[in-house]
Length: 483
Image (cartoon, rainbow, N blue to C red):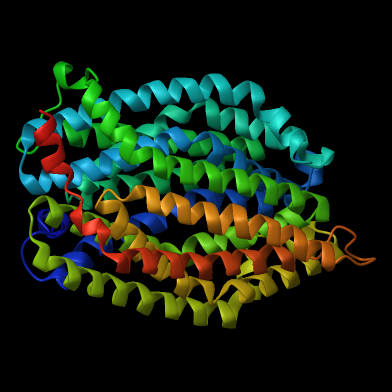
């Protein structure tokens, strides 16, 4: 049975066969894997929201949920180096795999692994000491400032496991292998849930407990991915020589990945500003935002999944110079992404309030706070619902552009929609929606501004795709000429 599943979802050559079947076959285990990965942050939030109490931990579930939530923008801000390396490596891996160039493939992977180690050391050295100052800078309420700082410092202390899992699982997917990353992620997600419950509900470690559970589980998944990669000797060979960074390969990885890294940096910095606004709206508003973003994490999964799948598909076919397969792949990915996103929109419209209730323990929460969190959270999900259709368009066309190496366009689009549109619009709407109950603005401003940025992102990515310039980029030929 295991061998049959392994064969079904193992390393996949997407340059042959039906584009629809190739993308669907590749995306299915990837969707399950993304779902499992989202469980990390979601289970963390549910466990601290349900099991932390004043009697046991000195703080309630809403404060614990807020502490975990305010940390997220800072974590994402400091992970931009990983994003850059992972994106650049993924593009090269997919194209070299499609071109059947084992030597360049091995060199690209080895260089990427070494760059990740260097980046992890930098992030650990920088992230741990500046965690609390950054939280103070974004107006984190004093009542859970120390909790958020402790959470951040533990996460940054174990960042190497997170780094290795993300880069190597991305490499495996670039090789067309979505089965083993899925298998290891499921093991890791299950371990994370067990450790969350043990550390928080059992031992009473609170917010620090979910941080330890996360880094332990991610380290396990990273080790498993490393073992898998070293056993794929028929496709890639990792040895001491390939781990020594090559100047040309390093430059190309960073050149391809830095636009995506800068995109993430821009997005994360914008989220820091939005988080600062969120913190000013009230002690419990960050908890509302966390609950919505956790649900949002699942809602965007189909869009991100088919975006990743079409990116690998396009990358392999560009490397193999099979241009006739590009348009069928585009149509297949778009249809799958929009169809699944539509189902999610309907679910959010019908069950938004009930989804928010999962994160809060009514018995341990002040009745007024509980009512506000649930009602405003459900309302926020309804505001965002239509945006998931737009997200499907953004991820498919953005994935195609990135696969071709046109990462600069996606960075510029993100800059416009996030920095130029989302942040100023959030502050403007909050300013004009001030009231006696909401002196710093109504929380709806956070979600309306996000919806507008999503809609514009879909439009801009589609227009850039339609220009067709991405088809003229051939990274495999470019590197061959430089050699």
